[in-house]
Image 1 (cartoon, helix red, strand yellow):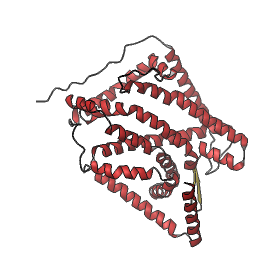
Image 2 (tube, helix red, strand yellow):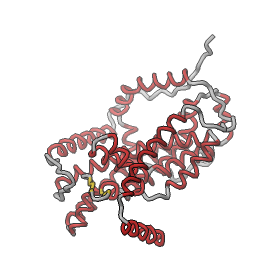
Image 3 (cartoon, rainbow, N blue to C red):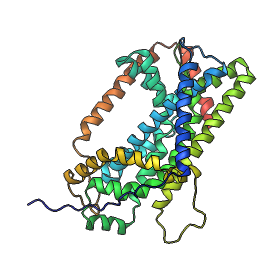
Image 4 (tube, rainbow, N blue to C red):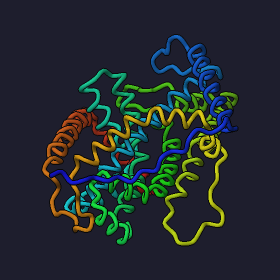
Amino acid sequence: MTPLLRVFKIELPGWRRFAWGDAVVLFGLGVLLYLGIRLGLGAPAVIKGPEIDLAPRVLPYYVGLSLGRMMWAYLLSIIFSLVFGYLAARTRTAEKLFIPLLDVLQSVPILSFLPVALLSFSAIMPTPWAVELSSIVLIFTSQAWNIAFAWYQSLTTIPRNLKQASTIFHFNPWLRFKVLELPFAAISLIWNSMASWAGGWFFLMAAEIFSVGDRNFRLPGLGAYLQEAANRGNLESIAWGLGALILIIVTLDQLVWRPLLAWSERFTVSLVENDNPLTSWFYNALRSSRLLNAFLRGVRPPFVKLDEWLTQRLPVADVMAPPRRHIPWFWYPVGAAAALGLFYGGVRAAGMLWTLRLEQWGDIALGVLVTLLRV
């Protein structure tokens, strides 16, 4: 006999009158449509290799490219962090292996990952794609580590009474992730995401302009624009680039990060109410928007069906059980594939290093010594 499964749901409120939030949503859609048309008409017809155009009219196009790389790197960081943190928190062997490894990797400069990433991608795909993916991976290495540590720490510091409640209600892994783990870690993940995004801006220039051997790889973007303006000593272009960077940072703060922080206040685990809770005008506008609520109701059914399917299919797990000693078997092929990729990239990098002359090795040793003294 199939056990009766009961899921608690909170229905969304009914229809509301047109509010000021709807005006904000309509205005935002109009701005996005206008920017899309302007970018489509104002973007140069041909981008010639590594050449960077310093005309201000091309700057929005470069900003869009850099934002795209940042977003893909951030998405990759979130996926990596969720998998890493869950394995490290649930398996003792993974914890002993991953935590020291991550601690070492976060201290490695991002350009140190360049040879392995670029050579590995170049072996399996065309050079333009390999360079683009290498740039995303470099930004990823400046974002992922603190998000992963934040997620791992949240999983290992969930209060015991909340774990007991999830066991009493027979939560399976999906319900435990959705109702307990992710809400408990929301505040920490958002704050560390802001720090990771800031780190991505800091290393954007290095991720868009790099060289391997005698080949100079450069990608169109805001970082490459600023680097080219600085190399030419063009103060006007530097001002345009810095202005665009400041504008996009302030815009993301007001439209993305601050609303997320205001939304995450609901997940605060405290018996004392915060006297000065974070607020966001844009978050309040979205909450009062009738148009946005109607859109969310329209796109909600597929996610509800996926939620019900995961709730019914995944087995119930005891969250109070101690961590497993060994990594689940299905992660071994993944680790083997990753190790094989790293080995292949290492062989290619070693082949490149083998061609260096003795005096070049001396320059490398001197550079390492100078960097070590600075650190």
